Length: 218
Ligand code: DX5
Ligand code: ZN
Image 1 (cartoon, helix red, strand yellow):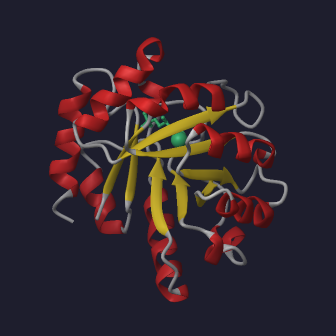
Image 2 (tube, helix red, strand yellow):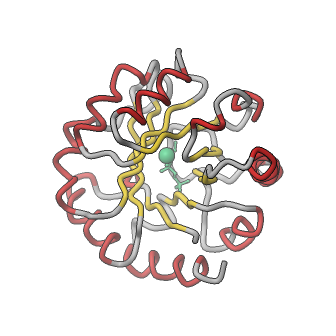
């Protein structure tokens, strides 16, 4: 199964609950929530209190992407707010093994996110602790950026690594996903497609349906 994860970064923040309800009801099985601290990335978005408030608007999987320095400080808060998946950046986590174990102890799925320039080798000793690995296909911090082409080779290499190690890790990608490139990315091995600007804006429900029409073929 392939899944769409609309990223609320491109949604109308004044109507976040309704935006989430709309895409969930249209068939989005994940909701991607970008938590930014203005340190790890230049931008600031929202934290656990906002996630808690929007939780009742959707039954979809809440997929929290922590773009935060030392994310271990906030894992408990995110789980309590209603996160289902919590992903931390390998570059920002001070104790990656500890963070992944703590996420599991909190009853959530655990993910590692890699910036474009970060090698897959950071996963060598922790791949078995991951439910999901996210390949950033843009530099994190902003929506609506251009897909970095070498990401495709990185996705394929990750797919190979997961196959060799026989883990159940899902491959997620984030940044620059569009209706035009998602079929090619399905072929490369992606399981979860984060899409912000390609979903929100004009007709988000119709966009979700258009993505799902493509993803259901794989
Ligand atoms: C960027 C965020 C993304 C962002 C993607 O740092 O992690 O989730 O919303 O935006 P698009 O899909 O517009 O590239
Ligand atoms: Zn994200």
